[in-house]
Length: 335
Ligand code: NAD
Image (cartoon, rainbow, N blue to C red; front, side, top):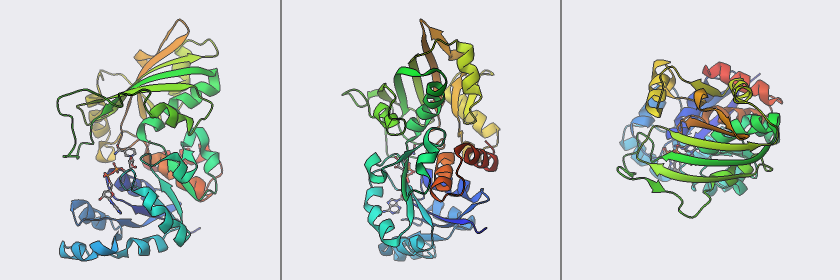
């Protein structure tokens, strides 16, 4: 069977990781990535064997900078069965007409609105909803992390209400332009934050509300969760359920911070030191007066990567069963 041809439009933090994860799978391959500047990422992409494309008005600049582009973004789209749009949040919308005109399927990321694709995706929660669809949005890193715990808890115990406080990293480690460097910023100040409603774009019946602050850190987000459940359950039962999820990792062994989790990612030999799973401190899992509490850390640069691979598989109908797609993706990536 020939492999599904995947193009990556926007080769930044998320795009370069999706490209490598796609290339690891048996049923899909990268036919091109797009860059707007001839920077180090473009050179690494060429070294990896990914054909590099650019917007028509940037081709000259690419050539000047030493990158021989294979063509325009339109040419790249023509060569693909499906495009994963990883351009900065808000830009993806402008590209919809391009994809529609070329008759290719497209995936957007969490920086875009749900309405752009009409289907917001998390592999464990609603894989089947994306089967055969032309447009899908893979939800943000935080929403992905929330769906991965909320969905199984709701299936097993029924959820009455979720309250979550998200402590967000300010910028990605390579981002030299953003702050804060010495402040905690309630963001947004007007509550609730958009994260709770975004979970409802994947699992509509969940009663959830969220608040969020931005911290001067680049490593990971941290979620403090408080969940009221329909059925009585013990902390051990919750731990057993979460431990059985393939994209959840329990952390302990002296790990007391996000910094040590990122060190673990490097020690494990993960590409770029990535941590694709939700990291839950199993010691924090507590049931008090019938309510569940725990902490989880989310690696914003990488938790959505396996979800993009599963979304491709669903949309291209390479696999009809979500659990089987998750298994294939995990095996190929080493999760
Ligand atoms: P990024 O800025 O790291 O990368 C975006 C890339 O797109 C850059 O290489 C940029 O040069 C390129 N680009 C800009 N304009 C372009 C254009 N017109 N055509 C083609 N390429 C163009 O951004 P990112 O962090 O990878 O975010 C991408 C999407 O993923 C956003 O929707 C974001 O909300 C979402 N997301 C980001 C994170 C994260 O923590 N970084 C996590 C989950 C989801």
